[in-house]
Length: 187
Image (tube, rainbow, N blue to C red; front, side, top):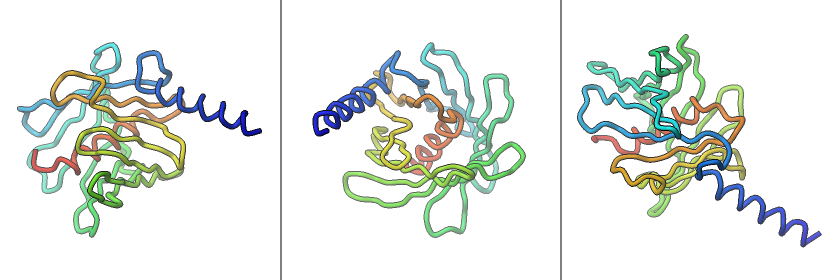
């Protein structure tokens, strides 16, 4: 029994290491924010370098609003900063205005930050790691569902998001955008 459990853990670690590598299963995206743009617009590219999602920062609004679109300009979700709350939070809404998720800063420690994502009609997600350096995981309990890393790319201001199969890529990417916006305010 001990040997079987040890082998099981070894396989899990191998799967985790494959998550961020090409051919490791799931989808992998590159997020690169353009440094000079009105309203903080940027593209999210897939592993092949194709622009698949656009995050359109709406200028001249009272609160920060980001529109998450596919490559053809179809709105997939809206990300809005929630004001008048004690904790920093951002809400992810459907195009019809229905709340899909709420991203909240949970705990700050000197080395790691922790965030909680309350998913409507789904399990909550925990985000932990080094948020400022874009080295963190998104998980459901002890199970990792996505990984964010800057190590996969040599380009400045680029980082990768690797998402396990069976996850909602748009929600996971929107969560990464929310965390990036809240952790790097004033960019």
